[in-house]
Image (cartoon, one colour):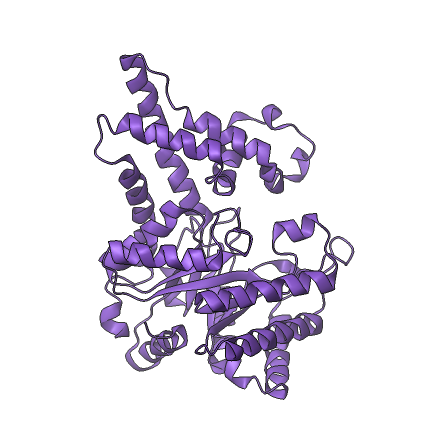
Length: 408
């Protein structure tokens, strides 16, 4: 597998020398079905695939997927063998920074302890064979609500984490990895063009001063108009940001690409990569909801008790309390049962990724599949293929179909 840095250099060459624009997709592996679907797509579409795993999803404690970094990479490789995938698959860390793991915020870890935890996770990711580390110290829970660390502080902490990762990489005798910096969130102060430029200039100065020029980031993340509730990619802003980043040798990357209205504009504006995650959870949820309805009809005819997966799944989301993370200001303090039905469904759909591995949910899913196997060849394959089609939508929009012919 070519190093991700080499693949990105090839993308830059294609743009500059041949006028060919590709945007890599980074799938957030928030479930086994999503991971399997992404590898399946990489194999049949002959495209490189990035997997952007947050510390909430995959970490030393297993995260909500149940995978440590090493288990996650092993699972990815197992699917690669199953589908005969010869395209590069790049496991990546997404949002590696203090307090970006929900548990660390809930436990109110002090800065020193939060930093130590992140550094241990960086080492685990490197040992597992990750190809890219997103260094994102743009949150500071020690500050008053609504306050963000200044750009110089963000740069200082970014360099500290990169320096630690480089020491660990050399200690482990590993090849170079790619780095991603910046954030799509406003709390980093990086969406303002002046702050964005200041961040890059200070980062270069400090990396050079620390002898880390070779660790210059492959990707710089910035706000390009999208978030959890907005779906329009701003090509004008992206073009301006791309022009700022291009001379540094890095590529611009967007997060929150879910359900974006104009994905074909990503390669046109020079975007190097884009993260997609919650959309694929929603597709998995929708496919299972459809199968759950079929199960109810099947069981009614056969006088059987249906699996009731969606009921079990909603209860698991409620019990996890993760749904409260997504409440609107006017909903705070409202009981789940008192919310509007459409809102409850959205929260269950969005929060499903946190509880796919809950024992009750897994048991109900197994029972659902067992029931439907009476009349359907492979219910699990149906769900995986639904997610795969959603991923392929971005593969086509980002000019990635048969991209290996160009990348090779």
